[in-house]
Image (cartoon, rainbow, N blue to C red; front, side):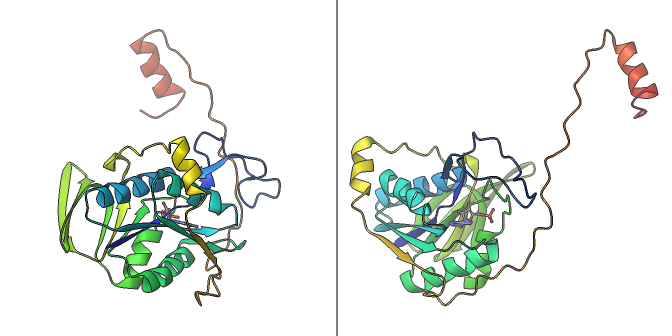
Length: 249
Ligand code: AMP
């Protein structure tokens, strides 16, 4: 079985996002970019399934600018076998990514596709669900444990007040929750080996996918500065302020 894992190049989670001068998006000039943290978890899970003898190949897929090759190389250094980049400078919305992923899945015929539950740049939380709908596959979102037994898969996911267990047949889609696993670090020799692993580059046209945007970003603004807090001397003073200043009680 092949596993396809989607890895997105995003602003590193330690970097503070700043709005660009045109107010149209985040300023990405000269800032550190990394693999989306939920996608590191997706790669780790795919590798664990392969190491348990339940998959033969892990393919890391990314869509975006040519530098996304670095993100794929990170997945290859963690242990993925090969990579595919769908290269484009165009802005990609979740539907376009889902369609591209579906076109690759049609070619590669994986038994499992694993994506992050959300990309930390756009926070859409849509790509996996749209992909499963396009493929008409079962889906398990926000998975916090995965168990594969032949053609069947058992997933647990956290829901309000407890855990939900799902069982489904493969091929299927999983989106990763934070608690699924702790991703490994790539070791130096593996980083060197990853440079030699195959990485195919193709275009959306090669896959005959229309990636045109369906939504237009009108404006991006910094959130309002939060006001400084205040330490009060007593409960009575707190109640007085809530009642007479904040007027919330
Ligand atoms: P989103 O729906 O944008 O929050 O993204 C959810 C997941 O879809 C991410 O964690 C990635 O696994 C995948 N994904 C979204 N956009 C891309 C992209 N441009 N390249 C590769 N994977 C992507």
